[in-house]
Amino acid sequence: MRDEASPFLNVAIVGTGPTGLYTLHHLLQFPRPLTVTLFEAGGLAGVGSPYHPETTSVSMLANIASIEIPPLQESYLDWLNRQPEAILQVYGVDSKALHDRQFLPRLLLGAWFRDSLERMVEAGRAAGHQIALREGAQVTDVAPLSDGIRLCFTTGVREESLIFSHVVLATGHVWPEDPSQDSRLFVSPWSGLIEAEIPAARVGVLGTSLSAIDAAMAVACQHGRFPQGDATSFQLSPGSQALRITLMSRQGLLPEADFWCPLPYQPLSHFTEAALALAREEGSAGLLDRLWTLFAREMAAADPGYAALIGIAELSPEGFAKAYFAPRLEIDPFVWAEANLVQVDRNAAARRTVGWRYAILRMHEPMETMVPYLDETDRARFDALKRVFVDNYAAVPPQSIRRLLALHRAGVLDVLRLGEDYGLDRDGGVTRVRAADGGEHRFDVLVDARGQRALGVADLPFPGLRQRLGNREGPVPVTDSFGIRGAGEGRLFLPAAPYLLHRMPFAQGITASHDMGATVAAAVLEPATAAA
Ligand SMILES: Cc1cc2nc3c(=O)[nH]c(=O)nc-3n(C[C@H](O)[C@H](O)[C@H](O)COP(=O)(O)OP(=O)(O)OC[C@H]3O[C@@H](n4cnc5c(N)ncnc54)[C@H](O)[C@@H]3O)c2cc1C
Image 1: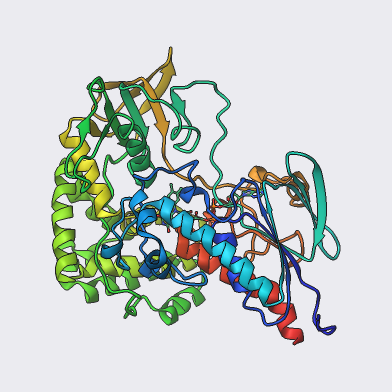
Image 2: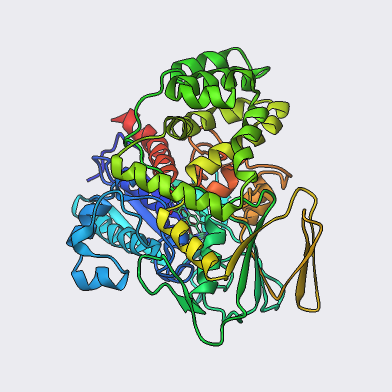
């Protein structure tokens, strides 16, 4: 029975990817009964866009292992250990070799998320919460009222609307629409590439990171296979000899392989919360330089050899970014990848940590908390350092690098450095790319795999909300708890990465989903907690 002193909480969560699930998880810890309705536009709730069978195939690996994934009801590894051998075999996983640092197919992670949702709903109901799950229900509008939020949604059969005390818009990834009927042009790897039949032809992929690797795998696996399971070789199918995949980016660099390091993170010595708070207290002017001084000190303490070699004491953030990438730019990306893989494998076997890599990894999240306080000039300057952080934390599973190398050895895969001033046009079904090397490169199929772009007010798919925010240009204004400023008065939250990238450039990842879910749940429950 409801406690009359506490406000009635009737919460809607829109979107049931990882962020929606972690929000639910934290809400359900509340000791008094809540009413929660989950809306999922897709037919299958609880999976999340990158882990869904419609966007992902078995060859695509998660770049996060159980040791880093915040549990939902139980840990990912505990769940894996409960799965029947036959199920794991479908994903190419050996039940006897399971461990908490393993990179597994994203589809398997999606299955864990879905199962966790079912178990949370069951346990939540048993604890007295009212939980409704609306699958195939797409929220089409959001209208803040004086004491609640109205949601309009469509089930494909009819339009409905309901009022909630709080609404959490955990709507996740937004891929570009593809208005063209061009079957040889994919505006993202998630706009039909997985199901499309791609000819054994010249395939250009814009991007060299995780999404681009996905695209390359999706195409390559239509035309051949990795026969040994361990991805050291790739065999093209008869008749597919003409397949050539080219990954393209400005720098033409491949990602690094994920490296071994102690988890949870060991504390930092200089780039600490207290030091960052002090740097921030001095105001926005010169903030990036003050943060850089702390960064350089941390690097020197963590890895004096690397710091001296790169001359960090004399460098600016921009200079460091240049020096960081320079050795890779001088070498063929596949030669570099091979050497990097050997080093990563050796270090993992010896449980040896590369100090400088680990320091950058541990600094990326604290650094992100400072981004909203950088002034315009420093934000622009930060771009160079941002690329270093992204390069470090977006390292991919070593297995993915092994596969890229196998594709390259088979003559199927190449990397093209575009340079800053490249040209691209599509004419008569062929894409022509003019790159830094001065040459013209032609592709029969083009996939744009440059990842999630930042979105703003104008991109919100909810006309009522856009109007409430004045149909203005620019980012959606949010509080530190992801409450939308100027709409909903602390009842409407937007923990959706594309809308937050301007202030949280590293917000993409399952741990970020967890942290956002925890923050939003605490903000929703705050009035009820205070009244208790
Ligand atoms: C290709 C790719 C691979 C990735 N791999 C990893 C990885 O290995 N490890 C990692 O940590 N991170 C990875 N990420 C980062 C990824 O952003 C997060 O892991 C996670 O998916 C974010 O969760 P989310 O719930 O915010 O968004 P999503 O997973 O996108 O889920 C959003 C959900 O909301 C639903 N929805 C949207 N709008 C509406 C609406 N109007 N009404 C109802 N429902 C709606 C969608 O259908 C979807 O189910 C990857 C990202 C990409 C693009």
